Length: 256
Image 1: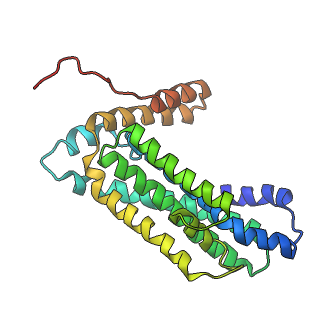
Image 2: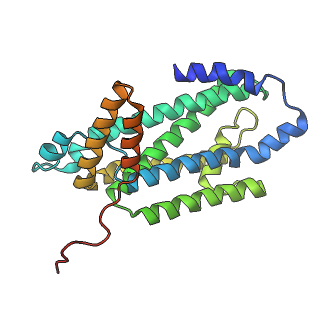
Image 3: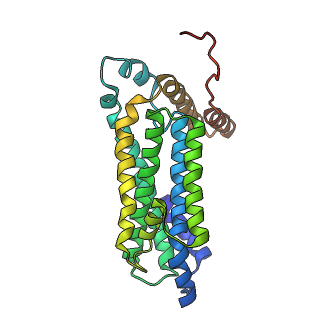
């Protein structure tokens, strides 16, 4: 539904006037890096979310009784992690397909190819975002390190955009989105890091912090309840509290 509304609204903004030869050449040179910059931004957001305890929002009962039971946490969290990965991949697929359909209105090529390539890149970006978040959460990567990795990825893609090169994995993945205009098999290399990050994230999800998982699940449940009653003030307050969750920097009692 959201994808259909977005296409309807954005079609009038994008227009349907075909690009010229020089404009098409600019798209071929700078387009992969531009799409790669968006992919790198999604991965950076995933790393930041994982460093804060995301992306899973478990119920308090699951944390207290399932994760504290004598069962391997990887097995207990396998189903929620897969659902989260499928959800983000689906959202990315819808977003990518919408962008591909809008690109077809200005660029040459068959609409099925544009929608298919956009959906493929969106799915990969969503999976990479969720996998990076689960990897950062399971390995308990600090926020400063997660932010630094995200900044490096963004800077790499921004450098590709400024120099009109294709060197970063995100830019290679962005090159896959322009296959209907120009096919380059080297862009398939950009899918390899996505698969690796998603698999590593699924394997590392069992190492998440129970304290942050319980607190995050409690805040998310309150957030959903407030959103059901359209209490915007409570939603914003809980969202701010969820985003500003900072553990104690110094322990109360230091043990050897």
